[in-house]
Length: 549
Image (tube, rainbow, N blue to C red; front, side, top):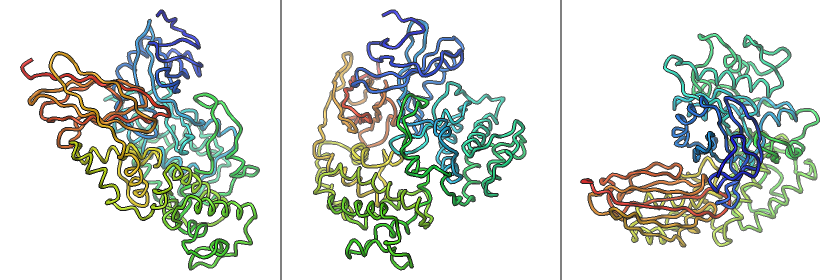
């Protein structure tokens, strides 16, 4: 197949990735950004950056292996790197959401929203800087509010680079850009000299942190993202009112916009205020008492509150619907309140109308997840114990699966039940109830595939994985032999390899080729997960490598 370096829509790369729309470029440094689909994965959307200049190609080819190993729920995962007819093509996950520059055109952000955004995105910068990387182009267009969970995602604008040995403070530029972005979202424009914008009023503590982010004076500015996070811990969450003319409901129903990665529906704007909600609101909305529903809506236990009749009728109707759905799903009310309360980033018992609506919207999101469970399991939420999933666990242990691998299998099965930030690990209560529910549901039908690695000729298998599912392959090898593993699938698949004693031999990351030392033992336990939205195939090959060869 002959490709034009300026390939157009409809071009298919390596008989797999079909280009759909050029979103930006071409640019000598950044190249072109394409929206594309993976035809081998049921037209799964992906983002592809095309680089044409030797300088940009050389830089990204050196960075790409490090980016492939960079795993964070708020950083798009990097897949293949293709070299075709003079162009380099970088494949990464598509992010469904709306960019902050689009949101900024809709309205000015409240101080509480911007503070929450900083607290959510600074750990991502800390990870990048800790790996010796600098984003180099942090601005509202490179920040995306993800549709599924409302979290901000940091996109690569094409200027990502390594920190040079002669530039130990290069990370400061990202922090400065973050400060400029924060001020812009608040409705101001930072001065070229780092000065504070006129007419922008802000609480003194928050303003002081932003002024240090904007400052270009080495003795005053922040040098590390962790320093900014620590400073923000001392900042009280501002009590902000919605912008005039922009209600929470209106901003949640923004019209379809062209985002940084195509035309996408905006997510729930009100989720950015979720850090303001505390346990008291949960009690206020859904008391744990078993009295009649109308009596249960009068206020939180032990507090003096106005009767529910003083609330807007629409809000009362919404609460009544929520209670009805809880009853219909047979979900324990007390546990459910704890679940929604615990999902907040900060507990502040304030009860004005916007915060109550946010709590209710979060509750509806949890109900949508819980509805995925069978009725018999839903009815036990809040009372599930470790013993409830021991039978399928013991069955897997008898087949040679290590206990640690079993826990990773359960975590993979809980992907649709738990938020992105909790995936891949066993959480604490009240979220542990959903993890155990996933264990009961997913371990009963686990199919274990066994392969024998032999010298010279590789053993190969191709297996389907359902969306949000996992497959486990046990690879047996002759004693004292290393094993070469090659796993290929979609960019939304991840792999981990465990030794015979449950030790991690290959960390969780994109599908790849790896060599496992003889000390890992036999059988190796290979776990492959599919975080896509459609069933997809993966192929695994294994070959034994005797040490004397």
